[in-house]
Each structure stands twice: as C-alpha cells, then as structure tokens.
Amino acid sequence: MRIALAAAALSATAFAASAAAEEGGQSDAMTSALAAGYKAAFTCSATFNANQSLAEIEANELTGIYPDYRSALRSLGRAQIDSANKTVSVAYDSALPPRMAVWRPGMGCAQLPIGADASAADYVPGFSSWPEPTAPDRSTAIGSNVVITSNVAFFERLEVPVTFAFDGQSYGEDNRTSALVIAQNGQIIAERYARGIDAETPQRTWSVAKSIAATLIGVADEQGILELDFPAVIEAWTAGGDPRREITVRNLLHMSSGLDSGERGSRTDRIYFGGQRVIDKAVTASLEAVPGARWKYANNDTLLAVRALREAMEDDAAYHRFPYEALLLKIGAERTTLETDWNGDYLASSQVWSTARDLARIGQLYLQDGVWGGERLLPEGWVEFVTTPAPDQPEIDLGYGAQFWLLNNADGVPEDTFAAMGHRGQFIVIVPSKNVVIVRRGYDESGGDGFDIARFTADVLTALEPDEYEQLVDEEGFAVYDEDGNPVYVLTPEQEFELELRRERERARN
Image 1 (cartoon, one colour):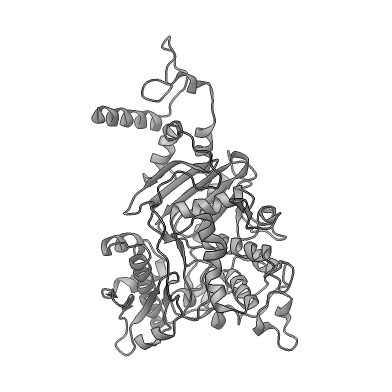
Image 2 (cartoon, one colour):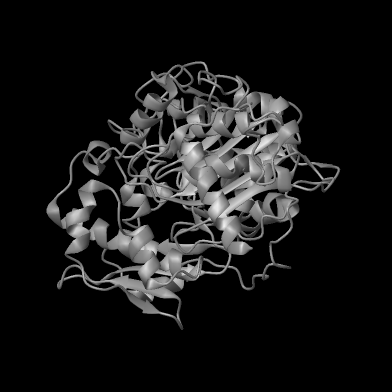
C-alpha cells in the first residue's frame, strides 16, 4: 500500500532525522549534554505530568529513542528526582552542572540551558495556581450535545482491529501501542490501553502538537488577535530591510516560511533537549527561499507561529492562559499540558502532553466545524483551510494542509480524511464523511517501520460499515453461519484465531 510506504518514509526522515543533519554537526560533548537533557526532560515530564513509575519511564520514554542518542544515554547515571522542588537532574560532565528540567503546574517541564545550575530555575515562569481536573474522565461522550447510545455493538465490531493494534506486528514491526480511542458521532465506541497508560495518563504528543498549535492560531484568528495573511509579528524581523518581515502566519502554518532549518527541519534538539530558547534558535534563522513557495517540514515554522501569537498579544500572562482558557478547558481537555522553554515560549511543535481522550476532543472539534456547546471557537472555513493542500507539497503520498497531514491517497480511506501525526506513533485521524475520530498513541521504535495508520483506519471504517451478515449474529457476536449452516462471512485466519480467543474468554467468564 503506497500510503504505508509513505508513512514509513516519513517516520524515518521527517520525524527521525539525525540531530547532526539539522544542527550542522555536533561534538561528542554536545551529544552527551543533549542526551542528558533528553533524559532529564522525559523523566521530569513523565513523572510530574503523567505520574509514571521509574520502570514505566525506562520502558516507555527512554527506550526506542533517537538512535544517535542511545549510546550516550546508556552511559548516563540515574536521574535525580527532587519531588519537593519538582526538578529532575542528570549528571553528564564533572566540570559542568547536571542538566536540569523544572516542572510547573500548567506549564510542565522546562529545560534549563546547558551550563546553568539549579539557581536558574528561579527565572522560569509559572502560574501562581492551577486547578485540578473537575472530575474523573469516564463518560463516553467526548463531543458537545452528544446523544448517548449503546455502544456494545461497536465494541464487538471493532474487537479484531483493536486487538491487532496492540500485538506489535499486525500493523507494522517495532510498534508499541499504548492507547486507542475510536469515536463516532461524538461518542467513544472503542477504547483500550497498555504499557501503564490509562484514560487519564498524558503522553507526549510529539508533532501532533503542531495540529494543536494550528487550532490555537485558529482560535486567535476568530478572536481577532492574528490574521492569516498579515505578516507574522516577530519584532526581531522588523529592523531595516529584513526580508523576513514578509513571512505571513499562513506561510508558517503551511510549512513554507522559506527559512533555513538545516537539511532536515524536524530536529530542533538544542531547543527540546539543550535548553535553548525559541528566540535563540528559531527566530534567528535566515531566509533561504521565497516565503510561500517551498514546502519544508520544519519545527521552527510552528514555533514561530506560536511566538507570533505571543508578540501579538503583548501580554505574557494572557498568552500563557490563552491555550487553556480559550480552547482546552472549553472542550473538556483538562489533562493536556503545553510545555515551554525557560523563557516562557510554548514549544507547541512537539512538547505537549495529552491523554488519548483529550486528543479525541481536538479531533471532535474539527468534526463539529469548530463549534463547541453553541460557541464558535474556530473561524468559519478554518476546517477547509487546514485541509486544503498547501501551495507546495511533500514528495510523498501524504498531502499537507496547514499543520495537518492529508490521507487523500490511501486505499480504503475516504478522500476527506486528515490527520495529526507525531513521532513514535502518535495520531489523530479525522474522517468527516464518517463522523469518526481515531486516536492512536504509542512508543514505537524511532527509525522503525512505524504503525500503519492508513491500513488501521481502513480496517476500522470497514468494521463500522453495516452489512447483511450483521443480521445473522450468533450468540458469540459473530455472524459466521446462517440458519442452514452455510457460511455467510468468510473469516481470515487471524479473525478465526481472534474468534476462538473470544470464545475462550467467554467460557472463562461464564
């Protein structure tokens, strides 16, 4: 299937290119510092955002990582967790302070810069207070104005593809599914978890965050804070005859800023793991192509779009509250945290921690045309904007809109399907014609084949299609033979195996 090959290529390039490719090469000392920063950051976020145990952090967050950091990471000692001060430090060089990440409620963990000691944590911004979630996240309704119906039949239909999604091989090698949520008409119809994750456990979204960032920009557009075709209001670009002043918000969302981001724009390790600020790295990039003319996947474009929002608001306190007050809390996404650099810029290209259910709510917002509870959050036409192919396109079988990928060339998948995609197998798949949202989370092997989300989506949609064999359901929930003993549905060997497993489980329950 062409789309599967494209997804694998994307995993191996756009999501997993070496750090050296983007950074122009790096010394062993820098690799050690970044590896220590990686360990500090993920241990901090998984501990204080997600309440994972050390064993879970080791198995989920610190294995299967970027190949270029694996050796350096293995040489590091144990991360030191200070539960009282909510910091994590990792020693790596006897001549320098350990790498440190500091957690704040509502802003997650921020990396201190390389060479900074613990006193630098005092300069990291944070909220003075932060509300706890209002209630456990247990309802099957994840949209607004949802009519709740019995979903037992859907669980039965989806049993096979959902089970196979967790076997680590049916949808690609080296994949490690941790969460699945499937919703139709605003109601969860299938849900499963593994690897210590549950309905209330946030995971790092990686580049799914880019689609969340686009959603925030849409909310800002609806409120009149930003406009797509106005130049991005980056103060550093306004001096003299700086040509970067012509870059618009639309250009940034289309991944067509024209800015230099190295050979591959998907690795911004010095920001993510090195403690550099957005204004140190992304804002200072030089122009290398005409804005709007060239597509190039670049974390910096997303970071700059969110930086433009901060500069347009001219009020840091309002900027820091904005994602929560204007979007997330309104749609019930109470367990999502946007992390910042130590200067307070949201790293919404990757460093967002969210539950599978909260991501399903983001997808559902798009199915509801940006309206939630009778309030328009996204501008009219925003869904069309993010799903319209950008002027220039990637040279793979996936299309690209505005911070969303387009599954418009996949077998068995409707052409209107679009998706948020992130490293290590993070997906929100949105199928407007079927009113379906599919969220898959994972800890897939970096650089591996990845999870075949197109084939899984096709299998889910097929399972949801009513056909005549459903009228002949036997007592175990499968229509296999009609009343004369003739087969009415031919099972694959995998489905026969799954059917026998289900029968064994039913006998055990009885």
